[in-house]
Amino acid sequence: MPDTPDTDLDLEPASEPPSSSAGTEAPPAAEAPPAPLLELRDGLPEIVETDAGLAEACAALAAATGPVAIDAERASGYRYSNRAYLIQLRREGAGTWLIDPIPMTTLAPLQEALAGAEWILHAATQDLPCLREVGLVPTSLFDTELAGRLLGYPRVGLATLVETVLGQRMRKEHSAADWSTRPLPTAWLDYAALDVEVLLELREHMIAELDKAGKTEWARQEFEHLLGFEPTVRHEAWRRTSGVHRLRGRRALGAARAMWEARDAIAAERDVTPGRILPDSAIVVAATVMPIDRRALLSTQGFHGRGASRYATTWVDALQRVREMTEDELPARAPRGDGPPHPRTWAEREPVADRRFKAAREAMLNLAELHHLPVENLLTPDYLRRLMWAPPETREPAALADAVRAQLASYGARPWQAEVITGALVGAILGADAEPEPEPEASED
Image (cartoon, rainbow, N blue to C red):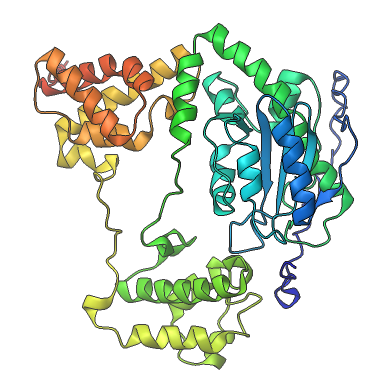
């Protein structure tokens, strides 16, 4: 059976923020009637919780045809792990299946049942890691969120796309639920089933739109690239602690690192999201004040959290270890990275690189507008920074274009991206090498 929530650390969902009052403003103009609320066509299926039930689901899904819509629910904000606590599937001829992976011996039969089928996901990078963790890996996929970006939709959340493309409203009230809860409430299961109810139809509409926009090949390359997606491994992840930039001195940074690592170890052991043990603000306060004992720590203004008192000895010990560290053991003030420095420093450090980057960025924005898609989907921003900081050495236009395409490919850019942007980037590189014209001096009247 799944772990029960840590009630001593209060895993209840946060309450909804109060809605703002209308004040004394005039009533708004009459709006168009809302789109009809999406309902399950086949009713709510029973949740599959046994190996025998899984075998039945696999037989039905294997006998069905066409792509399979798939989604996973995690307990983000409640649990440390990224595991899937519910997997939803729908395929033409098989209907919808809700599978609880926690009590299953293995999901290998499900992987076999889906062999060769195209998976339809929304925001695939969110679900692929937890599905891979239980042995479910696609051989081809269609990502409705990414398709929406390529098509230039300003908002690409599933509910928004469904309302825009299909003209139906989706429920949103359980999107941040604690899916590690057992048993899962019926209302939550209904919400989860609706997530795959629409994906098959949404895919059909988006395929037609991609074809009309001439972006079918772009989407194919993007979806193929997603098959190899791996979550970013963040080095020195403790530096992402909210407020850590306000700390002064390497010892304070060392204290933040030590407390972050202590909190992370507790969170991993208890499978609780770290912020529910100790908020980032408490880490920053303790690293600033560096209290020497439990009493001083707990009386420090701003040091609070569900685990503040319970793990006080752990926090005090972490701070004491930092006091005893030599300078060489303390973290550097700035993170170590393998990429170029931040572009805001380029003008002073490398004026030519700064001109290259600014010209390339403007060209990219224009191309993104021309092709009706977000600039970050035209090219990953980090790739642009790396290329403009250290471009190929040749300045012969044809050779430079080939070298730019090769350099972009080495970063992970797709061929369609290189085809669209190489000319603009070559122009930025060549144009930046020329000395800028001096600004005319103001005449003295």
